Length: 529
Image (tube, rainbow, N blue to C red; front, side):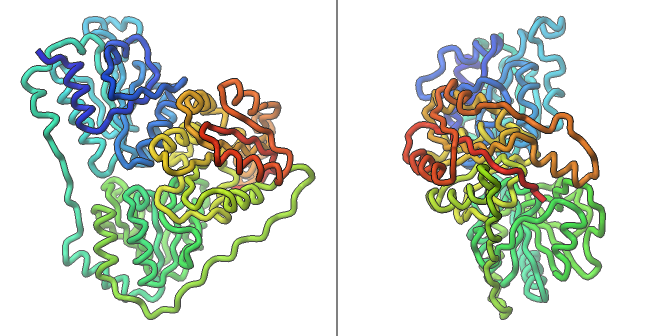
């Protein structure tokens, strides 16, 4: 007899899912029993941190990650982090232990009541197998579903008395299956798209996270250069799809209706690739699209295409479409663009360091291929202005705006890319949401450099209060937190920065360390707008 337990581990192994991110409870112990020696269990101290680490790991590696949560409570704790994975199109296979089958209906302690409904609508598919022998097949379906475009998280609830049952005949062929997609534009569609781009007087490219996720950055550069077209990153950017010092690069679009329409005014053709049209944030109404502009949207996500308020859409494989388009486009006769001018440094305010100065030092000292995991929401614009990112997979940001992503995602990204240095840039407010990730970083000896920009307040909220014309004082300040003491308590080397020169020295040392380092930098408050 082959047990469900043995069949599941063999299926995980054949699918390359030998790293498990989790925080176990009693329901999960039968699954973890006698874990094979070639599997690695990465423990997080809170389920939000567990999913955040898996999210970073999957995004950076380009492959799905496996997560094990504890019943309903653990799933609930993870839901905030799940919003980021959903909007990042991150393929996560999330499993959760369920009470024994005979006790679920009684709602015994640790029963996950209506387990399949709990994680929706933040998963592509959610199931609890009807009988034990269907667990391996359901896991196989979950793995393939997570990896099919658009990629995303899936959820599997498994009663804990299923593991020692016979997996039966249905499990025999699961490890040999391959599921592929082949969604490229037809020759006619490609020729029509090329003709429209060539005939445009003033085209502009808007690139989204799926360009970077599919490692299509090089093809996007070729297209921009052939068209001599400016390139913007889609608003609320969770990844960097284009080199930030390239002459065509223009920055990140604002996240408001009128802000985008004003920025794109005068462009007769707008090509949006690998992003929704558009991820707006602050409500600033206006014209969605100028009457003399045409918008074309290339996406692998049919729901993104369906809900867009304007433009034509092509649902296709991002990487193949961009590479095919780069091959067929002729070179434009338009004048070549010139690089943006980096804004001057603002003056320092007393003993406080400006975030812009911090980013200039990062740009000077960090390796060219450094990876930045950013969750300092009030300083996003300054980071994009001052830090050069030229390689794929160089930037990660919470796609849904849900805090708690930065610290754990940085740990996951570093686990997935040990040959590159990961730098987490965190606000003091956001750092508290995922602070327990420091323990995992210390235990796993993950050499992330955590930089906390400490201004003692929720800077982005203060900026929004001004934008919304509200007078709010309650709940916006977070004074009195000693991040160095917290970090040292978790086993992470930490230093409170006293000057810009001190930051340079400490950062240089941290870049050489083989274990994690936290640098707490007292900074001025700035607005993201």
